[in-house]
Length: 397
Ligand SMILES: Cc1ncc(COP(=O)(O)O)c(C=O)c1O
Image (cartoon, rainbow, N blue to C red):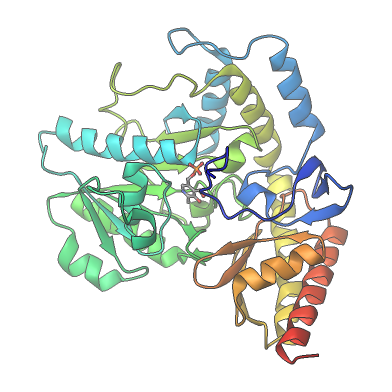
């Protein structure tokens, strides 16, 4: 029988009733340490008092208002994002996928308006993930995501991750509208692009005129210890940036940030969204940003990231039969596994620890940015217990 909920997810047999900071309380009362944060969504953990207050205050006033009207909460959040980033302008969406849709449209419209309507191609990289819409799956291009869903949206050129030469020598002709890249690949297995590579892409775009689009849906909003991950690479700001996940702290919200030049084609009537930028989402988003963008908060993310990484390196040394290495940036860390990554995730459930699998046999750790030192120690202790249980199984103990 077909289940009432379309079975497109491989769900764990766990259901949760409520959350408190880094903890999730299951329906049977068991407390789980949440090192996944809804896949980098709950940036401030669960039920953060400032977000609960922002949501409930706005809920009592106004939830939804069409973009036919002025929305002061939207303007306040856009102003704050513009003040703190490279961007001149912001469009609010409800998800990362929708941000991808607009980023692609914006880049193509830019060149159309410049009198180059054939300049439509967008360069992307293997292992990328940009969402599940037709544009998102075509952008990623992997068989896993696209098989059976053709015909695919044309105009994406896929290059191997980290290949400079192929890019430089063969690809950047006058059909290329933009390069689209995650500064730190998330679903692809927590693979950061080093700062010189981001700068190289920026220089290539400057030389050829192509627009540079960053997908910071997963790596943005403080996750790496800067408000956005690309800020670690000086002089590598994008023209367009996709944001979602952490920006709403758990409330559905996304955004596309852009320079005035890159956004110049997006005039009245060229794009829209019924829910995008609704007062409820923007009130919560502003409360998130007010906390995450504080330099002291970001510095603390960096400090805790260093602590977690150090402990994870110790874990890898203690369990060389289970783990290969630690990689990533900030509180976006991946354990490359020797055993099957989903076995590690499942062994974590037995220790009441939540982690997230990724491609390339990686287990992702994306905790709330508010995680404490004690919780970091506890998470690593639970991973250690999970790895010990797995090693026991491997050796038949
Ligand atoms: C880098 C990146 N881009 C886009 C998306 C799609 O976002 P959403 O699931 O909100 O549509 C994701 C989601 O995991 C992502 O990690």
